Image (cartoon, rainbow, N blue to C red; front, side):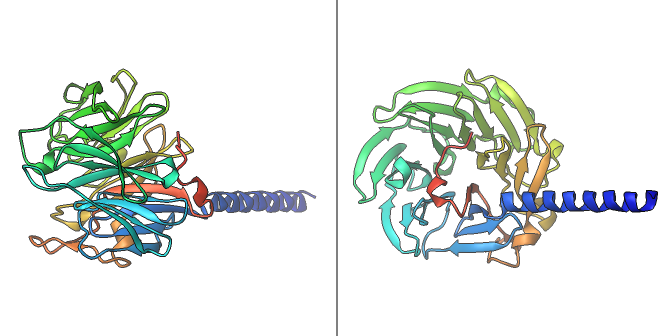
Length: 337
């Protein structure tokens, strides 16, 4: 009697595990990740398969890209802002402006469900809000940064939760600013320097993800540190790439997912060996454990990366990520907290 009884329970257990596996698969079945990759934008699924891509001749320094509810996309590139429709036709091109140190746009945010866009223009230290027709709706001045070069000025712009304001990262200064839209009044300043761990490579303020309660996720680029800061600027959580088990040269753009996990882009710029840029994307749970990752090996044969002239190594150059459900594009811009 025991043998059939045991077999029954083994079958039941097998079916339960199978159903659990199917449910987990369905939960991620249509999840997509839009990756800004320097000279192109790539969409991949959770298995690492490339499902879409776009490259516009002459556009380089694509630091971040966002999928839009109509199936189109928008990205910031060194030369300005570019908006494409669902058929990948360029429908809006807003150029960056030349400043005393040169021309370089760095980041963009999507407003009003894709009806407006905010472009951060480091060349002239300014944020411009533009509508779909290309009309400039507002110009927000940012503090001029005289020291250093053009590339070290500003890096990321994000909308402050429930405020008519933007968060921006001053790259080489390692400083975060919350500025009022239009006036440019500085509402809050967070100096990261005293909050950071010692690192072999210099920390730089790069990734920013504001949360609804006023907290901020911050990534420090070459310093490879992730910090969760409270609304008052105190450190609530901090992880380095090594303790996370990530093999990468940078920690860059971040996004908090619906499940509370953090998604982070791990750049492989300036590789000396392929191995040091193994991880391109990582999902990290609240305990600081990597629960999913995308690696160079998964992408290197699917897309044409950038070949570094000094080393001859092909680099994927994933700078930022936008995750969404491809079957529910109307919700792609919902704030995930």
